Amino acid sequence: MRRLTNKLVKIGIYIVALPGLFLFCKEKLTQTDSRQFTLQVTVQDTSFVTRSIFEDSSHTAVPGARVKLMSLHHDLIYEAVTESEGSVWLKNIVPGMYNCTVTKLYTRDTVKKYLPLDQDISLSASMSAIPLEQSGEPIRVTVEPIFSSNVVISEIYYNGAPSPPAYYFHDQFTELYNNSDEIIYLDQYAIGDVAYGYREDDPHMLHCIHLYQFPGQGMDYPLYPGEMIVVAQDAVDHLEYNTRSVDLSAADFEYYNHLSSDIDNHNVPNMVQLHHKYGHDFLYSVFNDAVVLFELTAADTTWTYDSFNHVLVPVERVVDGVEYREITTQYQYKRLPDKIDSGIGGGIPAYKGKSIIRKVFRQTGSKFILMDNNNSSVDFKVSDQPTPAKIDG
Ligand SMILES: [Ca+2]
Ligand SMILES: [Ca+2]
Ligand SMILES: [Ca+2]
Ligand SMILES: [Ca+2]
Image 1 (cartoon, rainbow, N blue to C red):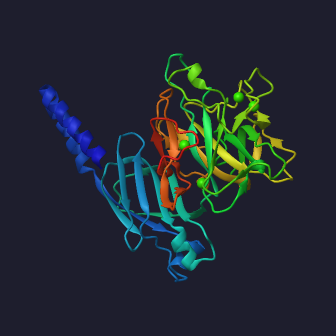
Image 2: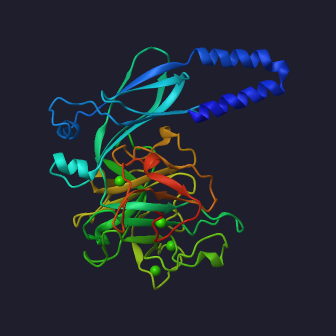
């Protein structure tokens, strides 16, 4: 709502500066003003989660859900939280096309009281490009439960370092964090990036451009609760090549493409290449991409491919996923299903030397629990500096 106010203030200044256009601008503003309306959004959950927590088999209303409307064509964001009946009234809506996201988190402490589960549960829904006109019709949104991941992507530095030299992106890295209370073995885990264009047509498979698995025979790479690791594109001190980059010589793993003249730091284990569609290295796009962490099974030894040479990985293998774009309201270009990531992180122009980091949800003793609603718009924030192997609490 503050953005709306800013916009109106700017229009006001414009009117004062150009008196000849006063009537035209005023009319335009008044017309827009008069078409503003109040929209009722009602949030329901038909799964077992909300009715268990409310101990009422017919309870579907979700109070305390955050509803966010983002205009596709204007710098307008409306945000509010549902009341006890699961409804919220968003005021002064300007007619137009909107993306809508709804999120609600039941914390582990609440879940444990009512369900035989020991984890946070988040409810989520998102809708893209919905036309909103003054009609009086309320919107009803059905959220679905999303279970938080044990291992999460805690940071992605995809952005690239500022020049000079120009276009320095070899310093990208992914940081993974054990958000659970159990030891996780990374040996069966893999990281891929998902192509655009299959979200609706093939909801059961992710079409990956690259897919790299952790080395190890099953129990070689434990990740203890609260520990993290860094996977570098190249595990070298990039400050030698770009003074505004980052030292990744102490990274835990690095991508290594044996098909090119990729750098191999022999002190740092290489990720095992399962699929590599193109590029000198496993490069994340500096503009927009979807990075996904998978837990593969012992049976995943043969793969299928689509006609564009993407490897197909079943959605059930997904542990965590993060989608990012320079413009975070472009839901029409979403690559990942809502169950994996119903939002979009980022919002950074390329080559600014910034990264996206997962927010801290809470701290128990010295251990951080990171936020995981499977919604990068909510769970991630921009960090002005990359923080490899560090949680910015
Ligand atoms: Ca490399
Ligand atoms: Ca190496
Ligand atoms: Ca997640
Ligand atoms: Ca970090």
